[in-house]
Amino acid sequence: MTSPTQNRPGFRWQLNIGILVFFLVFMPITLGLGFWQLERAAEKQELLAEHSARQGSEPVALDQVLANRDHQYRRVLVEGQFANHRTLLLENRIRHGRPGFEVVTLFERGSDQLPLWVNRGWIAGFGDRTQLPVVPPVAGVVTIQGHLYQALEAPFTLGEESWRQQWPQVLQNFELDVLTARLGREFFPYQLRLDQGAPGALDTGWEIVNVLPAKHIGYAVQWFALALALAVLVLFANSNLGTLIGFRKQPSPGETRK
Image 1 (spheres, rainbow, N blue to C red):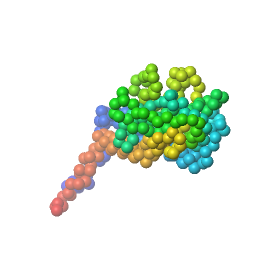
Image 2 (image 1 turned 90 degrees about the vertical axis):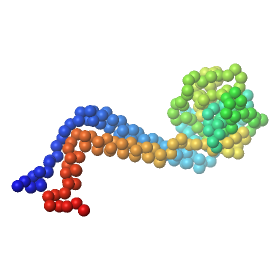
Image 3 (image 1 turned 135 degrees about the horizontal axis):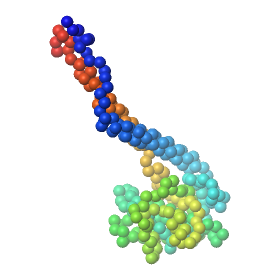
Image 4 (image 1 turned 180 degrees about the horizontal axis):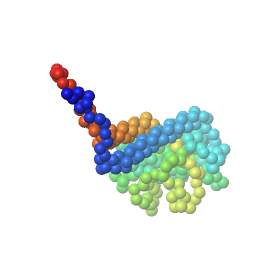
């Protein structure tokens, strides 16, 4: 008489080439994307920490800031005059559920100093690109306060930027090299993002990172879960593990199911 133990099949591989190739292609991709999301989370956390540390410091005069050093988020004071006739409207900026623009105006600091572009904040649009908002001008010599900012990644632009015959210019993104080439002038390498309440400030409330570190970690968990699912799939598809599990669930001779 054969015992149940003798009838139990042993574990064995039965290769499914199609599933195995699929696994070998997509497993490195899912793992790579998971680790990439973790790296992005660490980068965003570092940016937030840097911003928090520098926002807690006292502002310094821009004249004391060297242009060739890292001054991301450094708080500064600047004296000069807005060149109201040189204003950029950065389109497709959504706030409060409404379309609008970020207003960036040239700020002159004197003939012997590089001018800089000042991001005054957000202004509502009309949902029609041909109808532009009226940007309130700022007259006279003023002292403004804010933090220096450079985009950390090349902005995404749909097609080539169109340049209007008259100002303000309606652009998708702020690109300093484009402005330098167009206007034939050198500018301070950072733009200044105004503090709320500074002369010329509109709706500021700057977003430091577009995706928080916790969300990147959540994305990483999803990619690693997908990698685990792929591993389980290839294990079942290339072995008799499913049969073994089904065999163990069967009742032994003389045993009745309840």
